[in-house]
Image 1 (spheres, rainbow, N blue to C red):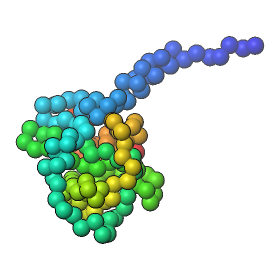
Image 2 (image 1 turned 60 degrees about the vertical axis):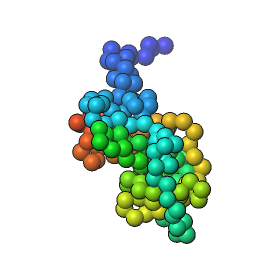
Image 3 (image 1 turned 120 degrees about the vertical axis):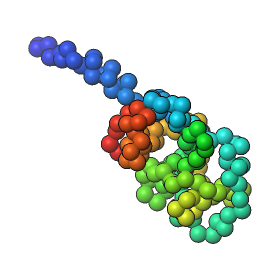
Length: 152
């Protein structure tokens, strides 16, 4: 029986792919980390945006959701990432302006209202982290911050 052909570059390719994969939110930003960091939003940041929100007409429901903090030198911005229930796709909102955790809704800069369904526990999964990488490149921030490049 013939031996399988081994590619000498196979191990190098595997190593390169593993090096690209962001293992956490913190691992997405790889350069200029003094200017931007990513992490899960904390309770203080979420409460700081608290406001009573009219929850009567949400645009959609997010499941497996997380509130992500984009931390700059001057300000922290929150965005919602998760799986949109109506289409079963990973999406991320514009900047969150208001949170109402009693009603499980958030209101965004674009004027949209989203219902929070089932939350994610812990860090976003690899699919969501890759989505964030792609988003940062789409808004021309990826190269400046050493974000791994993925097409989503």
